[in-house]
Amino acid sequence: MMRPTLLTMALCGCGAAFGAESASDCAAIADPAARLACYDEKHGKATPAPAPVPAAPVAAPAVPAAAPVAPGTAPAAEFGMERPQPVQEVKSISARIVGKVPGWKRGTQFKLDNGQVWRVLDDDDRTYAGIPENPEVTISQSMFGAYWMEIIAARARIKVKRVS
Image (tube, rainbow, N blue to C red; front, side, top):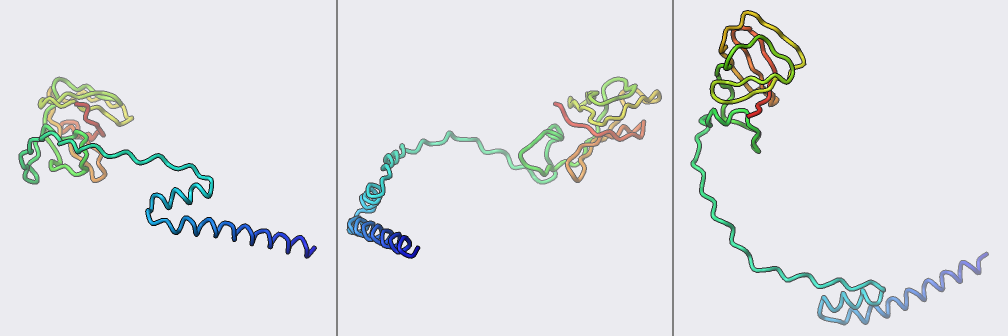
């Protein structure tokens, strides 16, 4: 039992000696790329293709500078539109729904007098007979980013999303 173990260890030691001999040949090469190619050749690895030479840089088109906007003065027309920045300057808007509002359900769209369109996200169906024509609403953003439309005359809050 002892002989196979000794024979195996002897063969492993010989392989390391042959590997060390070939490694010393590569180690003598001064150029890093040539030295790496030598090691790859000795260990049977394919040499990688040379890296492409980068093209001359292309000048980016000139972008006009945006006018600076003071904090808290973002236009109301931008309110509710998805933006890359999570923080918006306007926290709520007031407007009027165009026309009569007999009620709403999920998917109902309200067009406001400022041109914005908001869609109902709530699952509750509601019907109101006493809401006047063109009711006043306030739309505000919650701390977690959801938008809520409050119909003042009905004293009702509805979760909404801006469509346009």
